[in-house]
Each structure stands twice: as structure tokens, then as C-alpha cells.
Image (cartoon, rainbow, N blue to C red; front, top):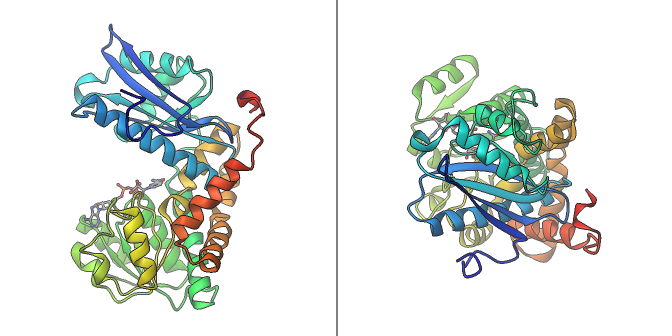
Length: 352
Ligand code: NAD
């Protein structure tokens, strides 16, 4: 099944774990460890079929390789799924059994939080293995560092498009005032940008507009806001066939994962419209940067500093995209692939 899976391409190792006593069924996919140990969260989901779980873990682990490489980290890409309804299957014993599964990979895979897995789960895993981050003795919620990285990425886009390093004349529409979107909107408002916000949670909008000089619009109206930058920070697929034609902005730069419903097609369409798209996996890497520093025993200050550098990296990618007349997404992929390709693959994989 694994070898035939359409998404099984260049993955180094895909391991299926079961534990009869606790009912654990998990797949850990290590996509690439050229740059360092693979790192990626453990997602607990009630997939309809094993094939669906396999497809998800193969795609997500590959995406982690690109994300780590494009963030200049010494990390590879991995991901794990535990199959089942978290409400029904998640027990302390099952998480400990899963921790032993992670441990037997001997550090080639480091796990962290993801959909339906949290800090408490990481601590149960930690009772069985050292190869886990995101516990309560770590660097804590990475969202402020993610927001900091998005802000600096957005600034790099503004500098490129408008030739200014200030945000004071810039109109930004922020979709989602969650952990990252709120931090980004605050950072923008504090730097003098005109901010328009939306959220399905009206209290969040009211709180924000009470504290900052900002406009609020209904969730679906955010795509029609006359603005310079659209910052999707709520959910995946915000840019799709219906919403893209409504945009009047020059830049799309936000925190959400999988912003484009169809990566290839919509990144080309944005380019054709003259809209600069900051690839999501480049601009939202602050969370990964945080857990990387946690794993290395680093500090929050180092993580903030590294997240700031997202702006410079994005600038390099934007310039390459212009020079080669390709999308910024293609330039980002090329940057990541070159980092991996430039490593001496004859170096033993465990040298990290
Ligand atoms: P969050 O759940 O804290 O915030 C999401 C916000 O979006 C909530 O306030 C929610 O009410 C709002 N929302 C939901 N549907 C909406 C809609 N239709 N219109 C407007 N608002 C809507 O999540 P978060 O941690 O801030 O993450 C936001 C996005 O960034 C997600 O896609 C996440 O995967 C991605 N991301 C987050 C991090 C991180 O460090 N937290 C890192 C990388 C990527």
C-alpha cells in the first residue's frame, strides 16, 4: 500500500505502528533528514480510511521538509498521524505507547503538537522519549513568534512593492483575530498601518476596535476591502476561485496554512493579477523556528530574532521570482530544494 501510494515519492521512511493493548494505530512519515532530524506534529484524526491517513501524513511530512529548509533550519521534515476519534481513543496509555513508537526511531523523528494533540499529550510522550517538543517546560505558545515573523515578512513585501520601509501609509485587511492574527494586527496598528479586521467572533472584533483605531467588517466582506495587503490568518483555502477575483490588494501575506485552495493554479493567477503572494510556509515559519530553538535548548529571544529574518529570506525569494519570471512560491521551493541539494548526501544521516 505504501509503495503504491501516489504521494509516496522521495520519503525516507514510513512506519506503521500498532499497539493491541491500547488500540494505537499510527503512521510516522520521515520525508527527508538531509538537513537534520525530521520534525513535525502528531495529528489525531478519525480518517475514513487508512489510505486517507497515509496520503495526509505523506503530504504533510514533505511540506515540513520544505518549511524547515526555507527557514534555514537544521531540520528535516516529518509528520505523524494517530488514526481514530480523539474523543474515543485518546488515553494516557495510548499516548505513552505512541511515545515508545517515537522513541524507537531513535531521534530521526521529533514530534510536537498538532490538530487534536496538545501539551498534555506531549508530556505523556515525553515520559517515554526525549524526542518531543511542545511540553510545558519548553518555550510555550509559539503564536507571538509566528505573528512577529509574519509582520516582518509582510514588511518585506511592502518594501518591495511600494519601496518604503514604513507601514504608516499602508492599509491592511486582517482575516481572523486569533492567536496569530491578533498579534499581527496589534503589530500593524502600533506601526501606524490602517487596519481593517474581521472574525466570526464578534467579541474579538469589538475588543480590538475598542483598543485600536481600526475598522471592522463582516467575515465575508473582508475580500472586498479596498486595501494594500490582505492578511489571511484564519483558515486554509481563503484564496480560491470565488475570492481571488474580489481582491483589490497588491500583496497577500498572512499566517494561515494552505492559504491557496489550489497552490499551483492560484499562485499563477495571483502573479497574473500583479498581486505579490508571500508563500504561507515561508512567512508563517515562526512556530517551527520556536520549536527548533526549544529542541536546541535555545531561548525565546533567539527564536524572535530568527523569525525576524523571515523578511530577508522572503526578499531574496521575491527578487529571484522577478528575475526568473516565476511565482514566489516556485522561488521558495527552489530555495528549499537547493539548500537540501547542496548538502553532502554522503555524510552519514546521523551526523546531526
Ligand atoms: P486561532 O484558532 O487562534 O485563530 C483563528 C481565528 O480565526 C479565530 O479567532 C477564529 O474565530 C477566526 N475565524 C475562523 N473562521 C473565520 C472566518 N470565516 N472569518 C474570519 N475569522 C474566522 O488560530 P491561530 O493559531 O491564530 O492560527 C491561524 C492560522 O495560522 C491557522 O491556519 C494556523 O494553521 C496558522 N498557523 C498558526 C501558527 C501558530 O503559531 N499559531 C503557526 C503557523 C501557522
